[in-house]
Image (cartoon, rainbow, N blue to C red; front, side, top):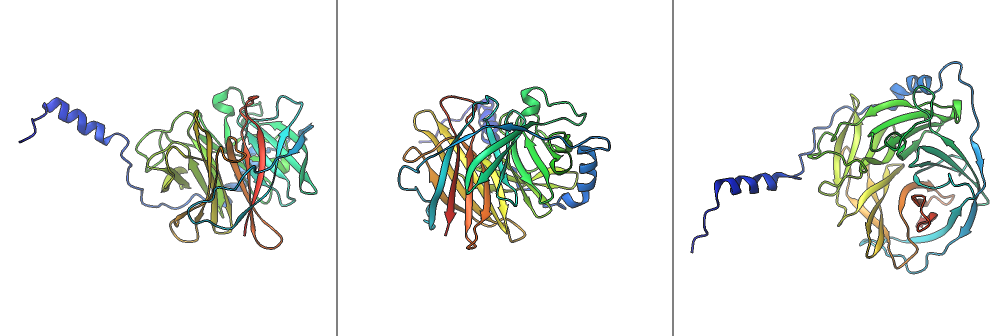
Length: 349
């Protein structure tokens, strides 16, 4: 029995609906934007002549040890991974919290960014968080960033010589801050304002779904886009500069990229999904970046309600003395009493 013919208007509507959200093909790779070529100008903008170095404000913090609380849910490849320790970080200062991006200094101390537009330094003593400092970010004119749309810093990458690259959402952009030269007086030196959708994406970035992840692959800036489109969009800055997709990571369900970091030729990332019925699901993954195009994604482990978990958004990868990799993740408590700022470490054997 033949199926009834649909009205032409309904057929057209179904065809349009079928096209909504259809991923665009990945663009042809362009010449990557090179940080080294822009570094001197960015430093001059961020720390102009006549601006003196200013110290960040001290923060009292308490680091309470936390246990994993159960067997680590491993990825399908079941790599050899061990929980190396974790802490619940608290402070009597109400400005401490909302930590979304994470990176490390050569000293082993951490730099983080808050989604209210602040840098937070976490200093380690004998392998334990011991003290902190905070400084609110400044715009290009030297004034403090004002308003959530300007303050929502999410991703962080720190160069060896103290230039901090920060990605923001809502007002989607990437900027540099010369913390080495000017400290908390460093001004925002714009790198790029992201287009409504990066080249290769078929839909616009959500207000709260921009470049949550940021990493430096040598001289190239990588961006992890939180807005899902057939998985997790991974972009790089190409000449323009502009963000151009180079991969769509096969993240299951509602998992979204929230943090990235490079170590050697490997990109490490953290993705998060939140369901009010089951809470947070966190996935930590790696990606081989040694070739001309990204290699396959490996799920390293997951955190869910069966273990200690929270709203993990930042990730940093370091090398242990024995050559193994340690992955650090930090959670954004959203300045809520129902969430915690957790810093946790995992060793990849």
